[in-house]
Image (cartoon, rainbow, N blue to C red; front, side, top):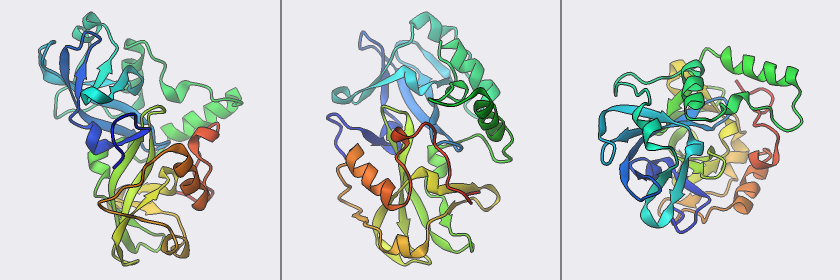
Amino acid sequence: MADRDNPDFLSAGTIKGDKIVNRAGEDLGKIEELMVDLQDGRVAYAVLSFGGFLGLGGKYFAIPWQALTLRPHEHAFLLDIPKETLEKAEGFEKDRWPLNRQELSRTYTYYGYQPYWQIAMAGETESERMARTETMAGRDNPDFLSASTIKKDKVVNRAGEDLGKIEELMVDLQDGRVAYAVLSFGGFLGMGGKFFAIPWQALSLRLHDHAFLLDVPKDVLEKAEGFDKDHWPVTNREWLATMYSYYGYQPYWQTKSIESRPGNI
């Protein structure tokens, strides 16, 4: 994987468990989980536990990704929220997680952030914004899933054939999105020796199958350039743009919104 000197991306597995500090360097707690927005691949929120300096160890807390900044040399994230705000925050029980936009909207507002799904994107009209919001709200699938839940889920094609599984999610630290998913292809394709980077937009949740649909033609997958399991590519935006282009997607940082290709479910 990419080193942590000044990375563009880190794996969800690497971020999970990192400690949280304040501006004084005091230990606030740690990141327990990342919750991924299934619609657009954003990190909807980070789940934090506050022990240490705050001593709020009995509950978990949902924190907007924007409030966190990587401190690479400390293997920690800076949480730029005043102590009194954190102490008065409404946490949730460790076995009862908030999983809908209404609950999350209140959390964002409390910490002084506008929910990302309410922010008008560049060039987007009000009617387009409303249509996008209604589309997200009307899904039968859950709004969010944890990175840990998504990892190891199987991947299938439109015929329901088993392609492989999701090994990891790589998070764009600047944009707070899933930059790409790392897949292993065994099963139907029989390409078990390598990992493959796949744009998040190419994956769609099949909730009742506990699987993700990968809408990429077989011949495209077979000709894709994978990477060795022990030697992950040095990931940067130039490399990522090339990968996106290969699969027929425009990089998310070059578009006004993340949209699935026509035909995706």
